[in-house]
Image (tube, rainbow, N blue to C red; front, side, top):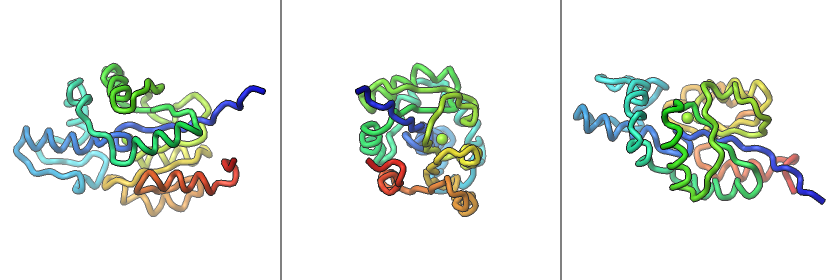
Length: 193
Ligand SMILES: [Mg+2]
């Protein structure tokens, strides 16, 4: 008998798999002699003064070295290994296509496997069927939860304001650590073995 196809678990890259905000802070602190910290980034396009978060992303992501040196979020690798056993993992990112090669290299280097990576403008435009997604964008999570997807919002300083409202949606789980997702999945009737 053939194995049933695995259900798909989508994973965002920036702010979930990697510490992109840390990399941004380090670069702007050097460049503008600032003391910016990840914990102060309390909105999506935080203004550092000389440059905003989105401006910094647009500028620095053009440099493949900037991408290649990003750190993996603590606990993510272990989570990925666990989730890969049960689900088909697809990384989904809104990074521009110019980042494609560097991003794929980073995934291979960090996790030792060429996971599928989908580049898309908006996550709600994902065309394939999937069951779960983890993302740090409150907007993306909101729209996908409304479409019936099971969504995990990875708690970050830039999404804390929206968490209370998002929690009211039964399809949304707010997670501070990746292990929590594994626990939630274990308790979901539908995914029990
Ligand atoms: Mg993100």
